[in-house]
Amino acid sequence: MRLVLLGAPGSGKGTQAARLKDYLQVPHISTGDLLRAEVAAGTPLGLQAKEVMARGDLVSDEILLGMLKERFSREDTRAGFILDGYPRNLAQAAALDELLASLGQTFDAAVQLVVDNEQIIERLAGRAKAEGREDDSPESVRHRLKVYDEKTAPVIDYYRQHGKLVTVNGMGTLDEVFTRIVEAIQPGHD
Ligand code: B4P
Image (tube, rainbow, N blue to C red; front, top):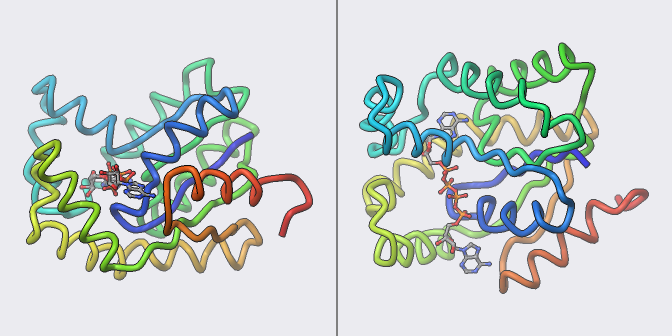
């Protein structure tokens, strides 16, 4: 199974991807986690990304594609993957199509988790308290939601037009959302 997880910040992509990875037995590739690992290691790429992420802006397409190519060059992605956090704009969606085509692959579905803004703000405020992630500050969250509307929402239409989009209600408990995703990705489900 090859899946792309889409949704606003705080919609549960990373949370559900971590569970789907065990269920589907495929690697979870989170561009946010890859970037945070670079920041934590203090690499030149991480130093470049740190401030951009803290503000809630998108890190450059070039950096992201380089990271993704490196990750997809590894053997474990051959049998499947859950891609979480990419693509976040139309240029990245085109780059992903190209990258997968160069590997003789495509993906099965783009799963969009739909959560209302009030719930998103509540979840990210909770994570800010629990984990202290710099980009979960109220100011950064407001900006991330704006960036999502402007840059990432068009990706949803792109996948809808290409018949890849599967929309899932992301409200409710972790178990409820997980069950909905599993049902939605069953072959023949529309
Ligand atoms: P990400 O790491 O992708 O961060 P995110 O959008 O907040 O989603 P995440 O997956 O972490 O959170 P989740 O919704 O699961 O990106 C961070 C930054 O990296 C971006 O702003 C950008 O700067 C950069 N970046 C990443 N990819 C990029 C790209 N392709 N191009 C450019 N820049 C890129 O969970 C949020 C919270 O909600 C958690 O606390 C969780 O416990 C809680 N939660 C989840 N589901 C819940 C539920 N059902 N009920 C209650 N709480 C729930």
